[in-house]
Length: 88
Image 1: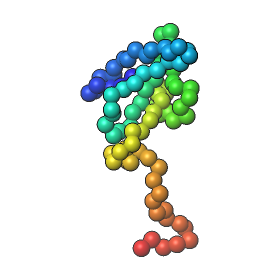
Image 2 (image 1 turned 135 degrees about the horizontal axis):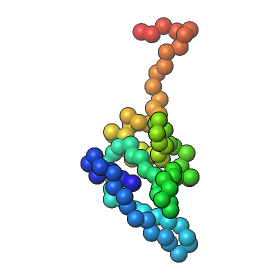
Image 3 (image 1 turned 30 degrees about the vertical axis):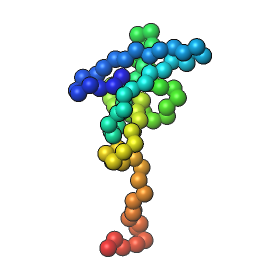
Image 4 (image 1 turned 45 degrees about the vertical axis):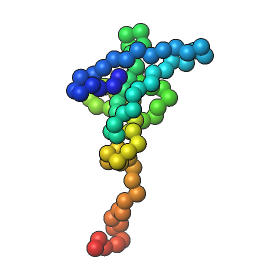
């Protein structure tokens, strides 16, 4: 369910001939996005996406679009402090 500004939007998915449900978005700006599915009135996460965000009341599937701003959310190779070395 993409956000439009600060409100949550609901989109309709289509079922293909093979039985696979799909939805295609417009090109999304670089960012971290969350989504969930509403199946027969029950909110559920994407069973094919291992990346989720959990807070006190909910769990949502997530993905990061590729671009500069999205790098803040990615795992990056950065120097780490080691207890056996000195930080200069």
